[in-house]
Length: 96
Image 1 (cartoon, rainbow, N blue to C red):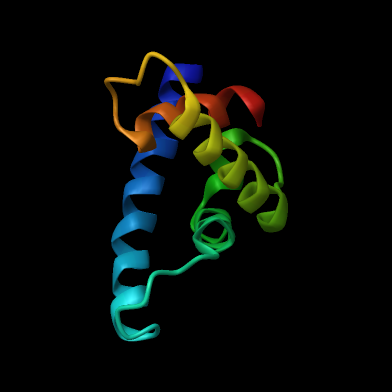
Image 2 (image 1 turned 60 degrees about the vertical axis):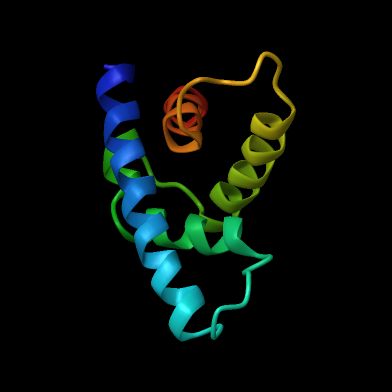
């Protein structure tokens, strides 16, 4: 079950990445979005994270989780061979 959830979350994170790229290009005129975890949190909650994990989740809390997981991903040794989205999705599936 966790593998199915992780795969669905990974796909959702990939869609968020695509949408966020458009947001940075069009709304931020190419500027890097320092607050990207909060943006991703709102996006993935608005686009079905609740249904994937089976309960309501708070977008702000998800944004904070994404920031924490990004920091952990950067610091993990040895470096993961999988993508950030896959690595993060597995942790979200477990933590939420």
